[in-house]
Amino acid sequence: MLIPMWKLRRELSRLGDQIRNLPRYVAELPLRRTEPARRAAYERDFDQLTKLDTGQIQLGRKPAVYLLYQPKGIAQSSFATLDWLVAHGYSPIVVSNSPLSENDQRALLARSALLLQRPNFGYDFGGYKDGIRLIIRHGITPERVIIMNDSVWLPMVPDLMERLEQREDVDILGLLEDEKIKHGTDGGQPSGKRHIESYFYMISAAGWQSDAFQNFWHDYRMTDAKSDTIRFGEIGFSRKMIEEGVAIAGLTSRALFLEKIAQQDDSFIAKTLKYAAYGDDDLRREGARIRALPIVTPGWRDQALNHIRKCVNRKRFNAAFCFANGRMFGTLFMKKNYERVFSEMRMNYLEAINDGVLPPPPDAVLAELHEVVGH
Image 1: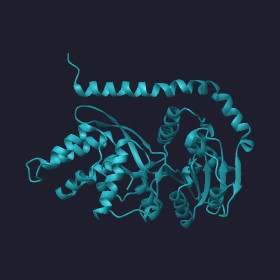
Image 2: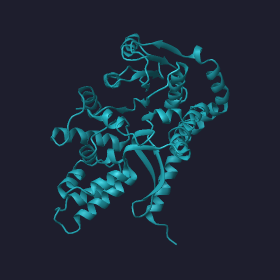
Image 3: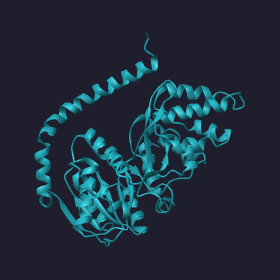
Image 4: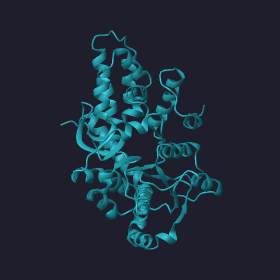
């Protein structure tokens, strides 16, 4: 029996990923062997291995752990993010996974309650755990907690905090809820396995105080194996909260995107395809074919919506379709990822702003986007 081409491509892609990741896996082997001892030493000598300074913002009942990893200097957009947090009553606890210059330290201390410089052990989730450690050490009983990192530009829209704080139906709220897809010839189907993407969490008082949350972070073992950090950190955190009955959600999700895009008119869908970012050539070719058809072509709308569904089953909807995401949800944030689809998305996003169909982000973010895109 012949193997379907889609399945062959999937398996070849999976093999290619394994080959590409082999050097990393081999390089991680010595770290994996020594990690238990290094982790124990880090926990034992935490105060000697880290540097903690008190900032100019009073530590209150709305702490915000903000993880930075910017060895070449802190970006202006990161200072703008801290200003946004402070303006909304949050007390930033800045955790830097790289050493800071004196100038950056001064600028961060002016915008933070605490500033922790630590070794880059455990990636973001290692820093998150230390930020949570500091909240507990300082005896704070939070009304609400934000845990976030600098892998996204944020905020992009002025009402983001209000929209987050209005969601009182969940205990852990993210910006985007991801769901794994079972791939197939039909473009894939949702698996029901979901998690909150880890660059932003807003935790309610009840969520913070829950045994599930506290036990997860008490037991979490920070690791320098990136795959384990994703598996046991980002994905494991959401899955554990769901198992323990903690209500989690994202402001946006693939399912909500598909529901809302189906409610738009044909002109909106045509613009969605105009500013599409693909990353994959087969999807790009299909999108070009559909765009070349007049929208009055019989079956055009069904073709376009099915194409959009296949795209967002393979790529993040907010990256693939920045126009539709921006118009339907607002551009809540933007990833700094350098995968092809994200690079294309940034170019198309700036084009949409230039065309006047999307509003611009804050000045610091816009300047950095132009610098990254190269114009």
